[in-house]
Length: 238
Image 1 (cartoon, helix red, strand yellow):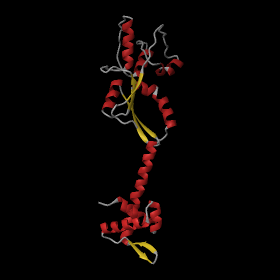
Image 2: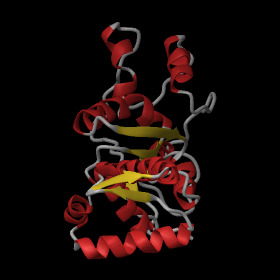
Image 3: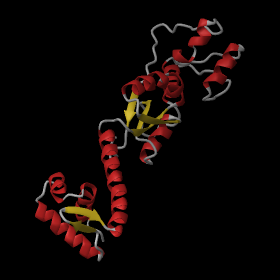
Image 4: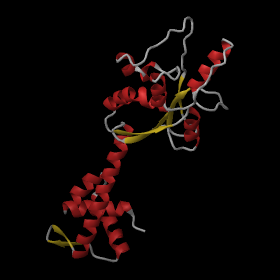
């Protein structure tokens, strides 16, 4: 197996055609560089350098290996730059999960601000129910999840749970016409006069301004969604 330290020493000598310059760049003594070159030539069983007077030249074999070494250490520099970029959040991917409601009405503003702060970070956005997003963390498909606060065994959305609890407190049993998670479909039904619904205000801003929908104030009743940022306790956060 090639000794990368020996290859590095050969690369510097071949690049500069000078043992002293190579030694300075490698922060070692000139005799140490000469010894490494000798070991590398012995390993290759090839003559890689030749001297003519006080000048150094590459042999044909040395030229071939120098070209390969040049590519190797160019990749090394690229790797170091990539590592530094990722440390400084100049490069990378954030795999983020959230609910469909948050994705449609809240995430555009949040992600726009995030992009301004970290323009080189790519975001992969996944959508589903809060429980779906919890599973995506457990399966390591997503790194973070922005979700409604849910209990361990809850099914469905956090919004549905809050609305159900609100009716239960008032001992009311709503006449449910239809159940769907499609907000746009719900709005169309309400605009047709086929019922009422509880939606986040951000979802109906346009319809309210166009007077296609109206809101009803619930005195003494406010619904707050507790938003959680969840992650897997065993996963390293980028």
